[in-house]
Length: 241
Length: 241
DNA sequence: TCTACGATAGAACGACGTTCGATAAATGTG
DNA sequence: CACATTTATCGAACGTCGTTCTATCGTAGA
Image (cartoon, rainbow over all chains, first blue to last red; front, side, top):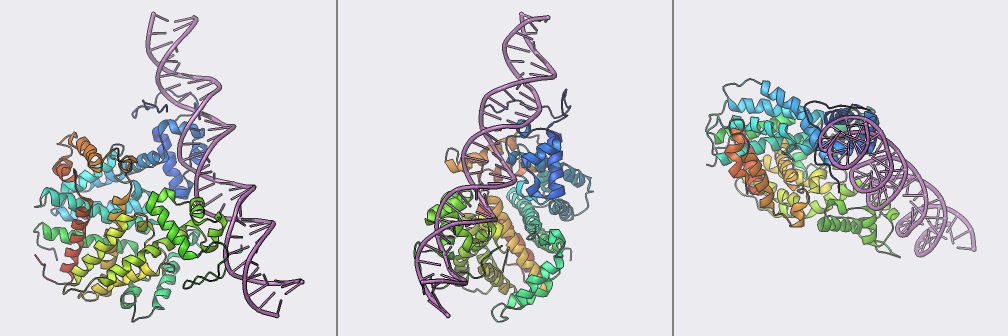
């Protein structure tokens, strides 16, 4: 009932007495937990322990775990945005789109939880919005209608986030342990697929060798390329190759 | 330690004494809960109550909640597969791909939890695998390498699942209550975006009218079209338009 | 009848997100 | 200076969840 109306200012950390906290410190600690031990490790209790405070204190900076994730996502996306803004503009807006998409993709593969919260609450996620804007600005260089631009950026973001989220889901506890390598993990499926009836599963047999030992990133790049090729066509730009 | 080695046969429900259970009954009840009250309503306790049994009994059919979701997903995907198999083959494999993708998309929009579990464990999800196969068979009609086929289907599934998952995430509790319509929900963001500095956010201003009141499905269809156009180009088929 | 197994049931455990009231330090006000 | 208000902290307590454990019952085979 007594949700705090004022929050600590973002800029300077004000006078501190016990532990030196702030929204930023909370977010940094949260991201640290996520990086070091995965999503299951982010707990209000663990977070409080890392910060040296009580659980209740965290709720002064953040109203819920969802908001914690929202803000942590935007916190991390700040670095991604900086990278993207550092990317030089080339002659081809579509090349630039690809570069930005790959940058975002890499960030999400590193931290799969980003996929769930990216662009979910632009009130809180200023960096998400700016990233979206940056992508969109490249479409302004193409001969498209506003609607086509909107859909193009949505599609690219969808490919990036969707693929990264799919690939980022941790395998059933065995790959992380190192007891079973990723190749072996893929190989098991490949073996099972090869054992299927070829008459009934001609496609699976056709691609099982590609699947076995494939690189996630290649899969993403190929999918992105299809979208970009479609976009290039839509914009009336002659295909590069 | 004493994980059951035998499971009840799928086909006929064997002799029953108290309540007439089976894996199928559990899955049907689980899907019922999900349909009626959303993901948060699927609880082992709620499920047991609906089945008229105890919580412990469910664990005889299913080893964990993840497996419950895996199997429930495949259970539902059976109907999707049947629909897809009923779709007639046209002259254009890409048109057929679109039809299948749209069918899958609609199913996931209805039940967003499908996105998380689709094709996650093909040992258990036979229907998922068959759906994947069905999509892939269309690519066999195109002039592509195995690798291109693999990537094409991955890309299409990625677009479908990614977009549907993104759109399926329930808005912050207000739209479902009906107190705030979806249009009003979109409108709020649109208003906030219009208030941004036009110099700093030219793209957001360009597309805000498209965003305001847009239809999710159009967004998906447009994204899918880009991928399909790219695929058509890759296969050397002259663009339809 | 005894034994083994298929199947059920619910209490108990530990972990989690969240709420709450009791503070204490900092700041403002006369 | 005194004193009220705001800002901030803390940890116990609540309710819910997934999961485990043990006891039990019905059935079928020996």
